[in-house]
Length: 161
Image (cartoon, rainbow, N blue to C red; front, top):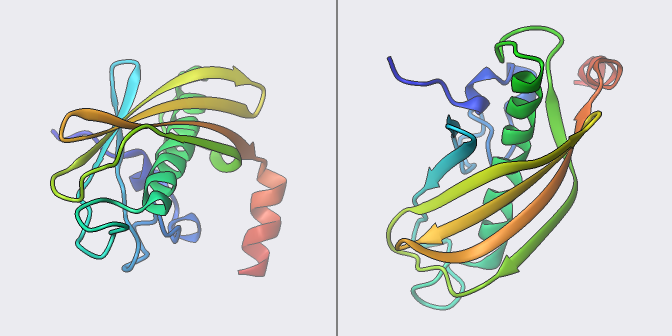
């Protein structure tokens, strides 16, 4: 049986993100999975994701690191509580900070691979470190602080939708 992606657990009201929302037909729709203690994701860029000919633009790099990290943060909170991702109360994370180091140009051809580790969990704040690879070479590193939004915020937000 194939493992379910973190983003596949998002309820419809939280599934419209441009980076990871499965209900956003124009978005990246990335999928993140546990591989031991790391969370992994892959993305195949399109020709229009370009900066200089043959290379991915930096905004895509930041977006993929961001969304892979917030999904990983939510999964880490479930893992910390030793419960499945389809249980209540739900964990949904938003970005408190995003830092990206662009190490070398990321080729436009081939799959982009992301590998993330949980650096720290403090209450509702989760720090994630991500390495991004293109053509099996490390091209970017990121660190994201993600914050789990509380049930009160989720309910308030859903009332406005």
